[in-house]
Length: 42
Image 1: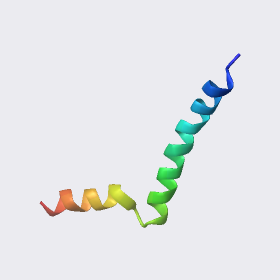
Image 2: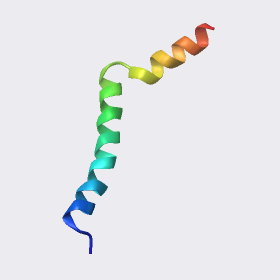
Image 3: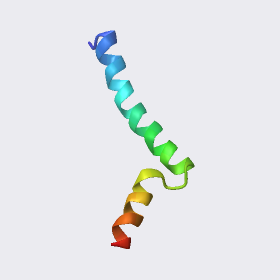
Image 4: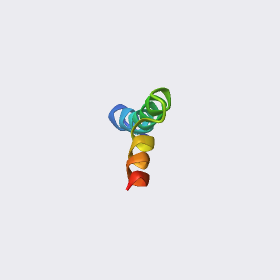
């Protein structure tokens, strides 16, 4: 059985990724879209 520490670590990793994706969607594309725009300008 998982210990509490392992369980919290397992839950927190996807939560961080999901939070980052939601933040990037809310900010209108976020980092990925602005990086892609810089790439296409050159």
